[in-house]
Length: 120
Length: 196
Image 1 (cartoon, rainbow over the protein chains, first blue to last red):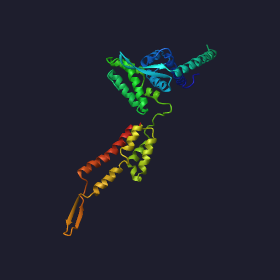
Image 2 (cartoon, helix red, strand yellow):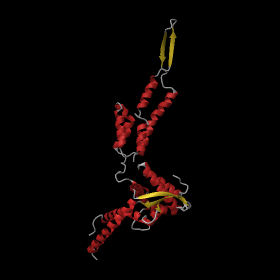
Image 3 (tube, helix red, strand yellow):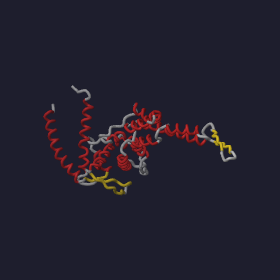
Image 4 (cartoon, chains in turn purple, blue):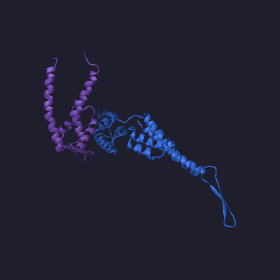
């Protein structure tokens, strides 16, 4: 039996899950090199499962700036207007490390449960 | 916002984002607009076809969705215009009739409502304080003001003067009166239109 509103509930749950992890994906993309906004968004948008609307990533980048997880510098660009480059702060790096650790445990647990509960 | 490197479709899109985000704190909206403009100028070449530009914007998302993502969690979306908003507008205009208390209540309602931005509230409060009160006062003064004074001088240095009322306000008074009446009315219309 399919629960009433099951698809909507599932969509909402996936959307929340996505929102929860995406900021750490941003931090991870900045772990080794600095990137500018457009480049960051393109990288994330390349992963279909992660991003549905590119524009909503900018409010997230703004929040990470305000929270001090990333810092930015404006640089001139030969291809057009100046670009805002993002790089990880020590606080952002610490936050990413904690997430990577937690995520491994989380993924392991969920995978294990899903295998047990799989009707196939 | 410099729009020189922006495709016209992107410029129109950004204007829509700005409209949607008009209730966001000023610096938040400014920062967001800078980021979005930077992205769109990189994503859409100025000479791109309208179709291509729209395709990029479809992927980029609905302006409303972006503003919702920017809105602080604690910031409840603004209320739509309801009875309290109408009461605020009415009291700001006519509140002076209850010895000025009505206008003060109107100001309180205006500032407590989430249907207006701070700028709207400042306009509602300062243009003009008292609503139509000043118009009424000015009308009474203009009608009551003596226009001419006729004096009869007696030889003893005593003069008898009589004020002759012109029977109505002068042209200058009329213009000032119309302005004083129209300003609060224009503010009320502005508030009614700005309330969401």
